[in-house]
Length: 223
Image (cartoon, rainbow, N blue to C red; front, side, top):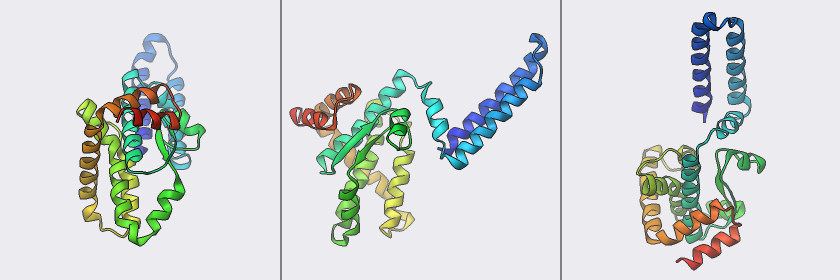
């Protein structure tokens, strides 16, 4: 999410430039836009270095459009549905940056998995390959869901990063990362297409902030 802070800095510089040009017309002191801009740039830098861009994410979340929020819901529903069918326990989910922040997570939202289930399996060498395959599918399911619904994707960089961390921990070479991402996306796409009715029902349920148990029940009813 460093790009988020860079975008804010770019906007701040643009605002300072416009303010400098329009300042004489509206009798605005050049000191005001300069101080404001450097203040924003300073905060953005601190946010990037110390807070992992959480502040920028929360700020930009205030301006998220309805269409963008719907995209986030479809993205997270993709993660939720594939995790459900692949037997990965789900403990919670968030759909906005503020919801994620309150629960101690990062980003615009996310599906929270049971940590012990995933970690213990990753440490078991006999189950390593199976676990990686499942995780590849789940992590790439958000991108797959967006492409199925919108024919493109805007999110998913954090998902790819988490997948690469897991592949690195498993000792796989970087040369196979792209292959694993494509394979996971293909598997997720196939699963979402097979359970399209359940996916659409889940999207509605998550938009209504149904509990995890209620969402799982809705998936069962629409299989």
